[in-house]
Image (cartoon, rainbow, N blue to C red; front, side, top):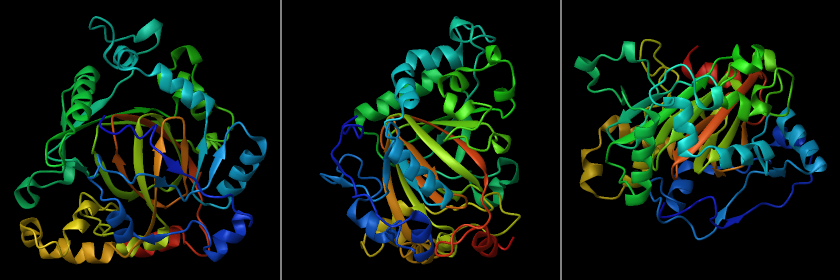
Length: 376
């Protein structure tokens, strides 16, 4: 890539002294600021021109330091976002997950469909195509093309090898935001962790902290785990803001992604679709990258639909925090926190969830705020 975010210069925050449960009540942490401010400082699509030093504001804890992990546990229990660095199994997976290794496990050897590399059961995945770099979740069966126009993305018949070639191309040429982009996703079913380990696919084998039937720091309520989801992004692919009810541990295996997080009580400002009949119900269709067009006087601004303009004016005031999650790190996203994600370069990321936490925090809200927002 033109910029390798795994080796870029970062500035990390000082360790906070106050107990995280206290900060969750007062709002002292995390330090949020308006979305418009964050995107003015570093516009979404400026992937080749990041800040000379990326200033991190989330607390970071070293997996290999016992005291750090005690603090990380306290932050997790307080339902506050943080990152864990230097995670050995994630680093090891990053070295292992070459395109050749992944192609063998997803595509099989010599066209064989039953087994991946080394006798490991073959994994499955699906590529998606976007008309540009903005990808939004929706239920395809509910999308009426005659009314709503083309859907945000389409499933395409790519092998992993074909997707990887395009992702390398996107890095090499600095693929522009308005060009077609591609995404590869794969999932491990929740039942796999309970089966004979000889039947496990490579993701479960390579990420034991995510697949172990017994509690780990990352998969801490195994009965509530709904499997492992893996996402392979190419440069620029941006996932619209959304929330997960489950407490979410997100591991960056290779590459880097930028996450913009918003608390549950920011929901009314994020353009979340509240109609239960809409195919994107409980998700947003707003491309926050368009905030930079407001007051630009450009033709793109003049062509912007009035409804989009109105929502972007609201969204730019939503309280947020951003972080770059890079290879070897794990990000904790608490229940019902919104996240908006841009793949900064070719990347692979997997996540697992450990059931929902209903109460949230006094200052940042929780499930009640989200339900009120979406009218559930």
